[in-house]
Amino acid sequence: MRRGLPWALLALLVLAQICYPLTGGATRAALTVATVVLGYLLSVGHALLSRGARTAGALVAVATGGGFAIEAVGVATGVPFGSYDYSGELGPKLAGVPLIIPLAWTWMAWPAWLAAVRLTSSRAGRIGLAAVGLAAWDLFLDPQLVAEGYWVWRDATPALPGLPGIPVSNYLGWLLFAVLLTCALRPLAGAAADRVDGRDAPMFGLYLWTYFSSVLAHAVFLRLPASAAWGAAGMAVTAAPLAVTLLRARRVGAERRERHPAPRPGVDAPA
Image (cartoon, rainbow, N blue to C red; front, side, top):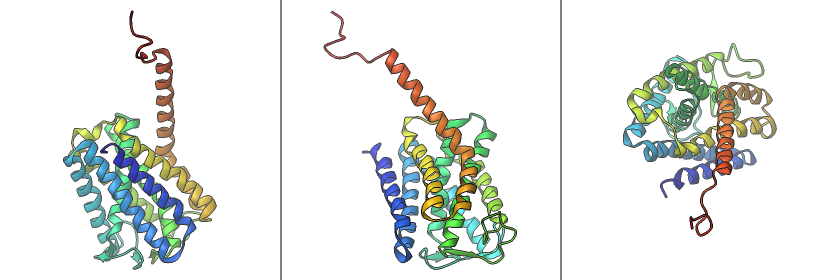
């Protein structure tokens, strides 16, 4: 049951995201909230089940607590993202910040960190890959949710080509906070956060699903080709090597099983 719970939550999240482009209005907003809550439960639940209370607590403190703090500062001062306001469509707000927003930071911070741990043993490399892996997600997220009217920028210049309505400062702010978040996560989470194993497959699946499904959704269903291109390029820094590494490991494992098949009871037993 413990090992199956992350997979069950991931399946529900995938279902909610598949339904998203097929809906509109209040239903779409409700699906947005539901998806964030599912992603949050998935990441925090996985951290708790696979690493224990210290790691899960560190993730909540750094990503959820830190995410709320940086968003509250951003809404109040315009630093570091730029000046923006949230609408009321994402549910209750505190200090001008919808309560689900810090949950979104947490949702993607954990799989981005584990992907970086899987890819490199360098501390600086892990911080860089995890930070880019988290921050690049916003190349999909902001264009999609600004188009829905969930928040609006007071001054959206300068903007990336093809992505009007969102200032470049937003993406730089995401990267800055992502670096701070990943720098703080490992010392607080403990050594367990510096290792990956078979229990982390749902998190790798979550990261790669987010990448490939976002490219498809933006390019085809949401009619946001520019964000599809920018997001594809940005998240590929982490997603592409992760996919290659996992496929290579799977192929090596299959070759080993072919060379050394498991004994068959009653057939391969010694005479």
